[in-house]
Image (cartoon, rainbow, N blue to C red; front, top):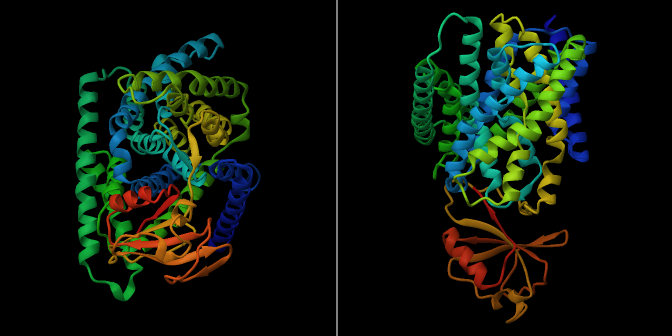
Length: 498
């Protein structure tokens, strides 16, 4: 029995990875293909309908995804957009839930479903947040730069807006299951604030504790255990914070931010590599599991198709744009095109579907209708928005090519020098063709040259040509290094992170 389980699991993972490769080639979101693989297996080969297990898998996967997303985010990138990011993650989610809830209430009455307003608002709450797995995966896979700090804004929003949607979902589940009990709005707001404050505080504290422990503990005889140790901190951050009435999802994201932005972290390169692979595994398992839940008869029910299609379209073209416009009103720095793009990248994914399992587990009468409507709405979002993320950025003139380093250099954390990659230009060769003719400052060296498919270590007498790629190491800080490049007329610079 266990051998059969492992065989099926291996087949699912193998097919999902191949589907991801196909998705990348054709520009489709890999997560959509993972979901599709799960649906195919669920409809034809595997009978799986455990919503409790799905919640558990989703919780574990989201811990990894949010932590990894925070770990890969530079605080220097999100600092300028911290205000709008927080507003989108809180007020934006609440406005989205309100707009969609109102639409569901009136539309369901018009088509004869007649959902009550609390149930309508519950359905809307599960879909109110953007999905961190979808946003992180699509934006980072595309290798596309976005102007006006839009990528860190979208990643910050998706990484921190789950707590608001989670809170709204839990409150509305309580309202629907206990209609005779009055829900105090003021108490709900206080509870939300307490959860956010406790989650943020403990996330920061646990992140600092993780960095301190990893730097001080000596397990160099088996460096792989550093990854295991950090994984323990991730799960501890979520579970302990949830235990003391904080928001575990926010705590995990903040812990990742603290760990990833630490100036010194032992074996950081190995840790990043481990969590990058583990995050993909978590995303694959989560989307496959969600796909297995699909029941074709329920999903193709006319009521589900009508309501799910209407909600998906309204969310994309009305509710999300309205919520973004109102949330970003106080922030004048964003152009109209930037606001349109933020509205468009309101991707739904695993998180809304995971939240949609709560009504079923709570025994709510319309629980399965809610789940299938959310599932269909998520499919529409991934198909319409997920496949056009790059195209929309190009159409709005917000995209630029984000170059990857040609030199794949593994830099130990103990080395504090800055590594960067530049391309030789005409202005660099104005005073001569050899390396010694370039006025490099002290403590700055060109350690390798790439010309075509050849790599070689240069000397002072080495002649260079326009288009050569140079690997430069310097003891100067990044700002001084950038000033030097500006003086030499070098615009094509790729900084290689530790």
